[in-house]
Amino acid sequence: MKVLHAGENIWLVLDDVLRIVFQIEYGPATRSDRHETHMMYRVDHWVLKRADRWPLGYYQELQQAIEACALSLGMPNFLTPATAPDGTIVTTEEQRTRWIAGLNPRTGRPRELTPAG
Image 1 (cartoon, rainbow, N blue to C red):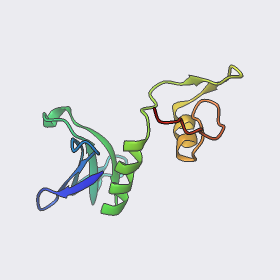
Image 2: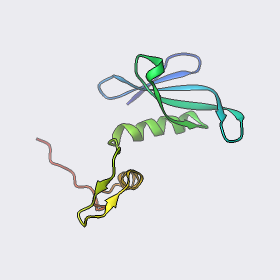
Image 3: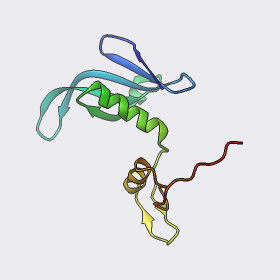
């Protein structure tokens, strides 16, 4: 992962193949519940057409935004609930929590490294 400072308030996050994956932009963000405006780092999934970008999150510090990008690059997309081996349903939030903790998202056991080849 590489981070390039592309403008006065814009950073681009590139993956290992040097493709742009995220854009970090420092600017005003309004909380909809309290109608307060704060200066924050907004992280967007990058696509060429600006209207099609969707946010990863908002962060107080640039380093927090970069760490969120790094975590997201190594994490699979958990979009649907999974079925555990015992038949229970594992929500997407639980899958994400298990992945961050170094566990298999479906079983909750430690992830095994797969041999290269």
